[in-house]
Image (cartoon, rainbow, N blue to C red; front, side, top):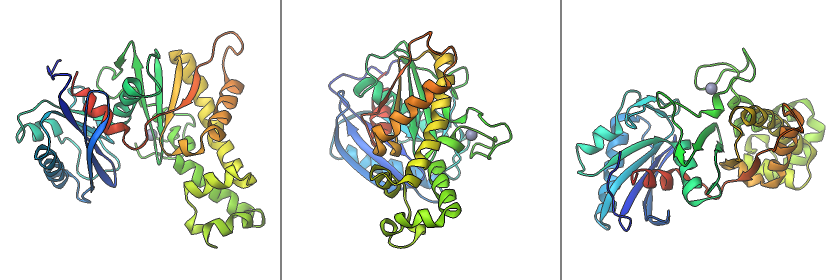
Length: 321
Ligand SMILES: [Zn+2]
């Protein structure tokens, strides 16, 4: 597929998350030259389509646009249009963004899974450039995955490929948003990190007191950012929570290494706030669990360059393909 978009032309990237829709006008270097955001309509579906159409029209009023790329927290069919499953956004199932937008705009349109789009942004413009193959995790509330092999996004036979967050690591373990039980997302995501911290607080109320002032006296105010700061300050309870999360992720990285032999594993999302504090622990755990240890090179584990804008930058570039 080629949309024949001139390199000098501008494209729009739209990233649809559970709470907000981020839009940006992006050039061929991955630079965002204009941006806007809207809350994700609670009813999802048709209201969400209207929100996106309004955003695009607003950009079109100011810029000459040559294509539209949609990044969405959902599984998308191989035709890059139909939503197969979206656990965090209402009424998206069977919706076809591409068809809906093409009814309104006479432009090339693609839709891509948000982690795939973010992976693409890292590959084209970020810290995954030149690496082959390269794995990407986006670790926030959940755990998304992306894979580039030989310079191409890997999507699999049906478009659902490279969902690294849904590898089963604990048969009959905790139920995941995807419906299955024991996915790595339930043990290595930001939500899991918070769960480990809360379990430790309940188990060791005395030790947890050191964290109270950072939470304004109430653990209900504990956030990932507070936990990260506490860990950087050397708080043992916070560090133990990161240890658990990193241990699970490191063990998964050992499996992915034997599966795909990646040159690097790039980690993006909210967890990057913890930086080397987290990544060092993941590397150590990966080495500890590695099959055929000592006989082969290990992938680098590095932080992503892009933050919340990765999905829209990647989607805006993918429509140029
Ligand atoms: Zn799952």
